[in-house]
Image (cartoon, rainbow, N blue to C red; front, side):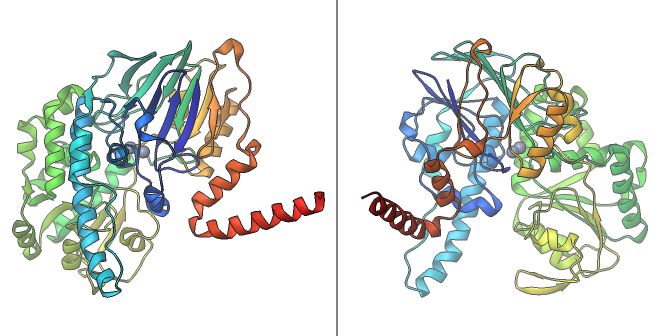
Length: 504
Ligand SMILES: [Zn+2]
Ligand SMILES: [Zn+2]
């Protein structure tokens, strides 16, 4: 059996692995490349979509699900197995992606018309997501399904609603794909499932070199910022990712209100995100995918007690600009777009207001420049002074940190081989070193590397990425720097010609 790493190899985004037996091809995830690798989404696919027989989807996040419509556009028609909440969340995120891509296209096309250039092509559209949605086959946790010679089971991974690790059995080999793992002490979802046996484990390494802040410290920081805003009767703005982080913040607010901060009831609270509201509704519909007390919370009563108002229309959203004292959560999480921009424009200048970051801020985003201390920023074409009090609270993460990854990994038997993915080179290496200290063999595969999997008895060592054929190295280089393709071709052709001449 062969396993090929199509993405999330020495990088975080673009998760996708191809598992090939003699008779079938199975994909695990088909995610989007994001951030600096975004252009890769538009490259021709590394696989023939029509030849793929089925797809297993670990969870809804776009870096795992975002290119499935592209696969379908290219002819994939096999079943897509996923847990029921993953199916619902994925559809919502696809719809939102098409909406955002269309807005971006409109903006770019206006510019391109003036430059006499053809309009940009959408990565996928409504038709593609409708087609893709028809292929979903719901597979709840802990039920084993069979497809051709593959047998697979989805298990809780503790990351977001419905998120799974997947075990796959075929040809006497057992593989576990970790998917994205949550912390060991999860707050909303059941903790990651403990596996004991696998021949190979594909493990994520997002935070392979980092420890999250302690939850008590995180909660104290959050509480202090809110107390100050209540005392000053000022505004609290929380840019938030709309899947899981927003629902987590809603729950954290509820804990504060009911346990230590009854005065929170005096502050009007708003969740200003139509998409976020739909996603919260999905959380309410799948109690069996949440911890029991959370299921109760999301299903009703307690949420009402919290008194958060859910904002839908742009008109309702604009009305919030006139409020001096309120808590407003809105997307996007890194302030790269969405309704949070309006709220920042109207609130960032005021030294009494508070801006609380509850998630990762990538380099190059507005969120990051504020975290890094910018005194003035440009928001929707207007110069805005940054005078509000800025808080960065990082302990509400839905990702395992280095300690969590190791305590999940340590349950596997000593002769398990780990294939480390979904992490930048530094955290991936750091996880490899820690696994090595625990006595495990591990490899950090490169993008497009194929690994031959064998049953334990016939196992041979996997060659490190350096042992690549020269052809693969050239392919990888050109994929990374497409604008240098011509140059590479010219140089190589000249080199080969001169080598041939010297032979003649
Ligand atoms: Zn994820
Ligand atoms: Zn991910």
